[in-house]
Length: 331
Image 1 (cartoon, rainbow, N blue to C red):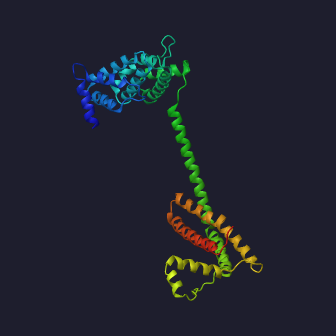
Image 2 (cartoon, rainbow, N blue to C red):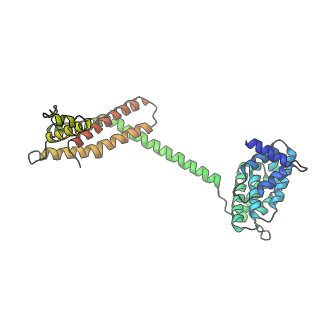
Image 3 (cartoon, rainbow, N blue to C red):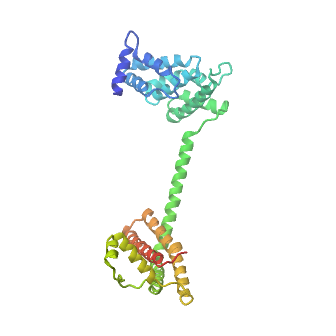
């Protein structure tokens, strides 16, 4: 669809003048903050296959840059950058007029300030400085005028450049350093886990066993709970499975050992063990699982087997937690 639009735009301009001139006029006659993507695509398509159209595009864009309106200059500069980064011939043509382009886009000469509107003029200047920095970084080695222009604005006129490449390199270096530190930390923790895995499991199992002993005392007796005899009316009422479950739960509740002065010590111990399970074992097991998922080791055999064991341990801990809560234990 876009190709058809581009062809249509090109055909519209074939009435006696070169295609690219009309496309540039349309693209720069706008208040939008960016060049219309369809027009930009059409411009690039035309100049890609014709050096004469490319030369005409360079000339037309420089003429548009001379107009007394920063918005028109700004859109023209955006097109210049697109073509500059893609065409050696276009770069050569622009560099030949670099002083004029910088004057019209940065306004560094006092007698030739940037035109209104002021807000767009400020954006135009910033974008031109950004483009010059990027052009110099990418092609300055091959174009002396780029190096000289960049050096003059930065070191003589003291314009502040965004240092995009330097900042990007710094950010990338910082990211690599963070990744290395993270990797070292993970490997260190993995080594600690490997050395203490047996004792970690033993400590968790001890807590599970102690909770089990307490639950044997305070939990519901593990035996079937008979239902009392029901008359016909009650039998009809309890045909519903939900109502039967309510009756079953209420009978189970009645079978629970209630805390009193005789068993308070057991309940206190159970609460402490339950707290240990929640705040230490479940938390640490989840952290170990996270570590094993993230760590990068040469031999995965121990990591994979340990990960499986920790997942099993976590499931057992969650089951014990549920039993504690069913027994009425809460922090």
